[in-house]
Image (cartoon, rainbow, N blue to C red; front, side, top):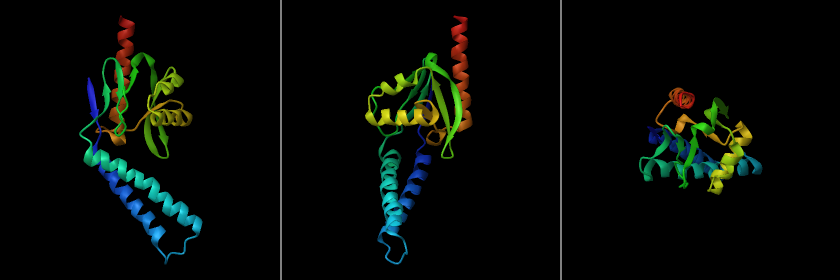
Length: 179
């Protein structure tokens, strides 16, 4: 069994970025000297405050409050995905027999590994948390699967994670044919 933890270092850098953009949004909103339209102030200033302010809360929680957490567990049964912030019970467990393969994809320049499953709609419906169900639906609409893994949040590189997942999937298929 391989356990892959969330990287507090990567979340710390995201925290710093969110703080900077939140301060930038605050500066836009409060600055009287800037020649910014009302729409620019609303979209740029308040939008930045809300979006990146929420990011500050999430990344601060992961960095400073939550204990060291497992992000992924990869074993002979399949892949277990644990949320960094939300307490999903049960966690997302994907059996190897349901996995068709892995595909490298990119969303807004962010490299991800799409976990192609045999029945994606069923995986979306089994989400017990409404926010996780919506995230799974958005993933499905954008990349064709409810599960997308980004190594940016884990203590492993993208290349190593993809290699590990493909190796374990192949081992699982070999066990089926030998049984």
